[in-house]
Amino acid sequence: MSDIIQILKDRGIFESVTSDELQKLAQRESLTVYAGFDPTSESLQAGNFVTIMVLAHFQRCGHRVIALVGGATGMIGDPSGKSKERNLLIEEQVMINLEGIKENLSRFLDFEREENAALLMNNNDWMKQFTYVDFLRDVGKYFRMGTMLGKDSVKSRLEGESGMSYTEFSYQLLQAYDFLRLYDEEGCSVQFGGSDQWGNITAGIDLVHKQRGKEVFGLTFPLVCDSSGKKFGKSEGNAIYLSSAKTSYFDFYQFFIRTQDEDVERFLKIFTFIPLDEISEIMKESEAAPEKRIAQTRLADEVTCIVHGERGLEIAQKASLVLYGGSIDDIDAATLLEIFSSVSSCDLSVDAVKGANIVDLVAVSGLCKSKGEARRLVQNGGLYLNNNRVTDLDLVVKDSDIIDGKLVVLRSGKRNYFLVEIG
Image (tube, rainbow, N blue to C red; front, side):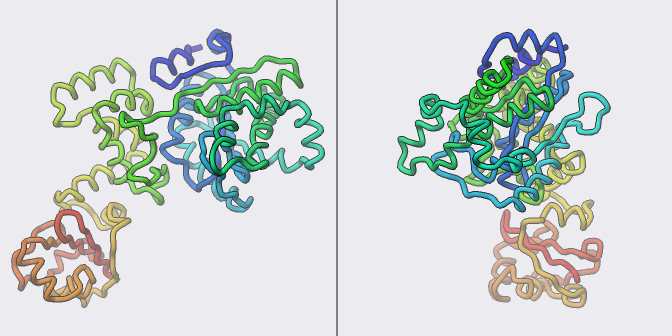
C-alpha cells in the first residue's frame, strides 16, 4: 500500500491525526474512510476541493472511500466555522442537491470499478428511522454537556452576538452517530475533514469507542486560504461552483488563471495530481519567465480538465481568447453560445438581421439605446461585429456575418458582449 498520509503531507493537505498508528495501518491494509458534504446547493464549490482531492488520493492508494451527503444534517446546518445559523433546507431540495453532488463527485471518484468502488451515502437513510426519544436514549446518553460545551465550534458561537440554537448544538451528536453507523455497516474506521471539523470528528471517535470498544481514527487538513488570507473558493464575493450551469467554464478557468504567484505552487500540489517533481520543473520555468504565467496556466488547464473534461477545457480556452478580443472565425455557433452563456442577448428574425445596416441592428438589438448612440459608438471605434472593429457607418450585415445562420456577436468596448440569436 502507498503511504497515503505521507502523500497528503507532501502535498500540503494534512494537518493533524488522532493517532500516529493510522499511518502505519494505512500502509498495511486497505481502509474504509469517509468525509461528509452538506447538500446546501445542487453543486459543490471550489471550497469543497480539498475534501474531494483527499478522497481521490485515498482511492488511488487502494482504500475504499465513502462520500456521505448530509441529507439529515443538511436540514440543520453545521455550526463549525460559521458565525450565524444557516437557512434550513426541506427534504425535497436536499434530494435534488444530492443528485447534483453525485454528478460532481463522479468526475473525481470511481463509483463503478469492480474493486474499491467509491460509495455515495445519505445519512437521512438512517436518521429518519429514529424517533426523538429513541435518539436521546440510544445516542444522547453517551455525551456529556461539559465536553460538548468545550468544543471550539460551540464556544465561538456562544461568545458571538447571534449565539447558538439547540438545533445547531445537537449537530455534533448527529455527525458522531454517522461515524458509528458507517463503522457498523461498512467497517469504516477513518473520518476526515477540515480543521474546523476536529470537534465533530472526535465526538464520533468517542462514540464508537464507548459503544463498540474499538479504536477508529480522525484526520484533518488545513483550511486553504490564499496569500491575502481569503478563504479559497471565493471570487469577488461569489462562490466558484463545479457545475457549469452555476459557474461558466470561462469563469471557472479564469479563477485559477488569476492565482497569485505566491500561491500557485501550493495550489498545484493541492488541486492537481501532477507529480511533485514535475511541479518543481513547472515552477522553474515559471520563475524564469513570470510574465508568461506558465504555472497559473497549467493549474487552470489541469483543474478545469478534471472538473469539466476536455470539452469544458477547450471551451474555456477558446472563451479566454474570444473574450479578450481574439478571432472567432473558426468557432461554431454552438460553442459560441456556451462561451457567451452568461451575456445579454436578444432574438431577431433572419430578415431583421441579414441586409440590415449595422447602426440599425445595434439599436434594434438593444446593445445601444438609440441609433444616435450606436453611431457615436462606431465613430469612437468602440463597436465590434464578430470581434472585428466596425469603422463604416454604412456597413451592411452580410450572410457570411451570421455564424452558422444562427448567431451574430456584437461588442461594445473591450468587454461588453451582446448576442443576436437568429430565430
